[in-house]
Length: 384
Ligand code: NDP
Ligand code: MG
Image (cartoon, rainbow, N blue to C red; front, side):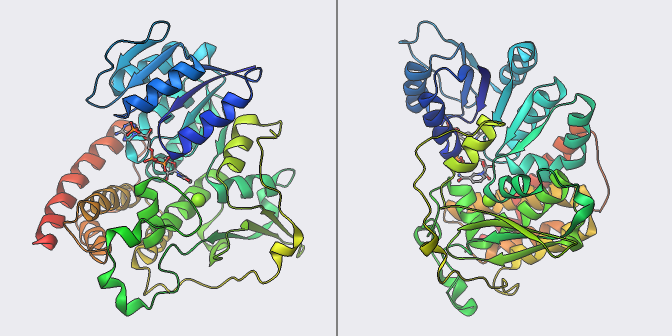
């Protein structure tokens, strides 16, 4: 029996995780669930999974109807809860969206609780600190991101000194076949129609700009200690190959499967067991006609920015890029800037900040705050 807590239980990843957990009442005991504002979904999960605690980190309040679950409010309450009950927790699924996931992720690791990590933004901003904290407390970070779950599975039993190259695959998002000179005219509706995956809005926009793949390269760099020159990206529209690891002896391992996030989520939750959660089976014919091609950096300027930031290697720039991206995506989703302004906001913001390494979580959070203010002003000016 694993005692588990879910941060961001009401999101796309969180809901799929709760569906898997519900199928395995003997394998999981839910200690807590958190949501930001989606009280209705939280209440429905409480009635099914009966957690000891539920935390609302946003503004809304639960009114009545809950008896055995203790309801808490605010991000501080969530991190305090994680540290207070850390001795009773086996796993925290970190599946809030954005930089907001940093404190629950860090608190779990610091208190010796293993983390199943969907929240890639916390590793992008604080990769070294997270890894060092996990090493100190002897805890593991199990990736939920499909590419990183694939790499993790391919690397089992192999030291990363034997790696020649790691290829992360990318769907290319909804605009993969669209000519680059027409990108100025894409709208919010088209951007949110991802061809392969059904995900939250922020990551769906990140997939369309391919910033998502940039964040994932940084995530892979930290999680697996792989140098940037050994990381590569191919667009693979069918999303069957989730990543490929090439070894120095010319052998290649890939993890393949139909595109369904329940596969990597169930792997991270069940590890070292595999859960029969009802996956559609892959038949070999599906491999006929699969395609792979290199992304065009001109068409995906956000991806090009992330490559530069990764090469530079300092996390002040990673924090800056991530925060500016969150602001730009939010401003785009509110209809205030164009799709092609997203990279302008990020590029213009990056110009204002210096390149250095920051390890203290407090300093990382304060830089994130400063960057957001600058990026908001830049977005407003661009949107005028
Ligand atoms: P969603 O937007 O669907 O869900 C986000 C979750 O975070 C919700 O539970 C939401 O609560 C909560 N949340 C939102 N804002 C805050 C905040 N400020 N503080 C605390 N909690 C907050 O996101 P996804 O599930 O799509 O993505 C979650 C993470 O997983 C992201 O980092 C994403 O990059 C990563 N990921 C997602 C994949 C996917 O298939 N969706 C694939 C790979 C990685 P509420 O519902 O109440 O608003
Ligand atoms: Mg991914």
